Length: 259
Image 1 (cartoon, rainbow, N blue to C red):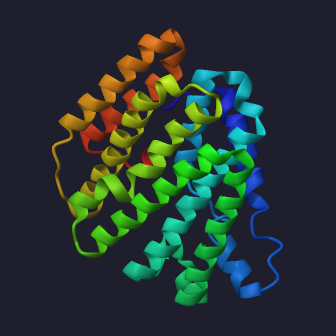
Image 2: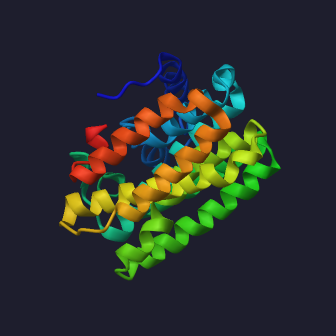
C-alpha cells in the first residue's frame, strides 16, 4: 500500500479542482464534450502526483504555489491530449471500460479537442515562465516523435519518447520552478527511466512482451542515490514510492491500477 503524505494528497485535490474548470466555457457543445470527456473521468493522475511528491521533497511549503498547481494541471492536460490522439490513431473504441471520445463524438472532434487542450497547456505554461514554455516545447516534440515511431510498430524504440517525457517532466518542472537546477540532471534521469519502466510494464501486461528492466532499475536507483546525497532524508517519501514501483515492475505486476 502506498504511503503518500497528506499534504501531497491535499494538493492533488486542488489540481483536480483546477482541472474541473478546463473547457467548461467552450461554446460549441460537441467540442466541449470531447474536451471534457477524460477530465470528467480522471484516472490515477500519476504525473501530477509525481510532480507534487517531488515538490514536497524539495520544499513542502511550495505545494500551495499557484505555479506548482498549474504545472501539475499542464501535465495532466498533455496526458489527455496524448490519449485523445492515441484513440484516433489506434482506433480505440473504449478505454478504462468506457467509450472513448472518438467513439462518442467522432475522430474530428477528438483531434480538435486535443488542439484546444494544447493551447490551454501553452497558455498555462506562459503564466509560469519562459523556461517552462521552452522545456514543454521540447517535451511535446519528443511525444510526437514517439507517437510516430509507435505508428510504425517500433514499440521498443518509442518507449523513451512516447511515455517517458511527461514522467520526466514531473521531476524536471519542480526543479525549474523552485530554482533547483543543480538537481535537474538527476531529476530528469529518474523521470525518464521511470517512464520507460512504466511503458515496458504496460507492454508486458497488454501483449506479454518482456524487456530487461535491470538497466532501468539501476538508472533509477543511481538517480535516487544522487538526489539523496543532495537532499538527505527529505527524499524518503519519494524513495518509498519509487521502491514500490520498482518492486512491482520486477514482479511483473506494475500497472496504473496497482498503484
